[in-house]
Image 1 (cartoon, helix red, strand yellow):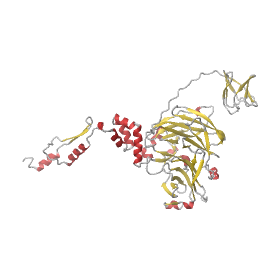
Image 2: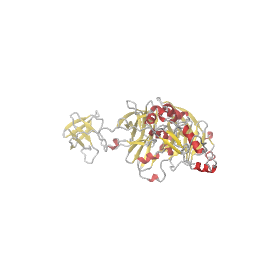
Image 3: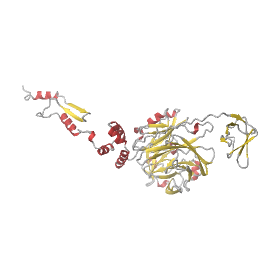
Image 4: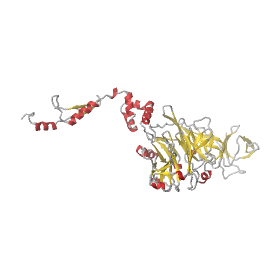
Length: 536
């Protein structure tokens, strides 16, 4: 029987036909071949027909694809895919690496109504190495549509010895430190690139200053790319002082530089003030009695200024609770001050001020709300509105109408709308930390584009020749002019210093090239004076 007259035989032979589907990287196009196929036969296999249509539709040569069309396509892809496509060819690598693509990508994402993601981070992370800290910043952890307070460590991990702290965030860079032996790190959580900063003056054993209140300020060029950053930390004084002692580290120089800046009034830095506030290019630290002290690391000459809080705030509650019921931070280019009444019987429960004139330090009252004005769609929260205790946590970085607070009795985080005076539960439960407040939280905005961490240069070490020294005993007195008179075996030297104290360690070079170094107060004393080292 002929093949044409036997349909079963034709069907059997068709089922045994092998269709070859190949892709040639050299020619950059697809090929479909059928060894038994000829132009006179009728295609009866739907899968073969589908492959032929697919290959005819997607036959292309990427070398002739216009860059403008390629940019349009790539700018609509997820960020992770874009960086993978850098490995396709050199042309794609150069195209994606251009600053113009970065700007176009941001514009495209904004036009598509894709707002920046952000989270409230719990500052403390309990891991053994900083590499583990960086690994915790995986996109699937912090890039989440549902709002929640992000805890990077579990309750079991908090029992570990090593503890890292998130100190500040600036344009996508995160400043962290290891508590214990104080070590600072700057990292990009998107690319997970990080650098370790060198030690500052705290390594010098003769002074042992205590630093805290670390913050970071970054510079961005006209293309929106980060070029450098500066880390600032302040010294904790034991008493009120007319000077603000601080150190700055610049990624451009790779060095720590100390400054002693005069203040118009004696200041006492708030020890439990959290991290500094960044606004208008300056870092702001909370001080007792005055509000905040501001410092701009990029402004010359170096100086600081005091900015007072609103005068009609609840000063008594601020002193009593150490500022736990207030929130001062930047939101949408505005410096805002939010206050919550700690007692349920207070007339106003929520108060809001905006900075009207930053140079003059003038505040403007924006909202004052009583508990009778509040409402909520949550039944359980509605039953607690007249008696609940609220602690402010953070402003919404992209919505001036929203502030987040912690409801102590319900152990949840709520959002409050200044416009409609509405409270809503946004996440529950809040985690394992019971003392959650703005002090232990930091708002973190996930950038649209990764921020390469500028690598600071390694400063050259300067080796000074060692000068032979001999130990002698000396006696000092102060004259009426405030100059110190140093006596060594009947010889009088005059040091141009304001005062000498038993607790002060100093180094002076006199007019006759004799170097005098004060050592700490020791048991071997002559006339209640410390010992000196003197060397030519």
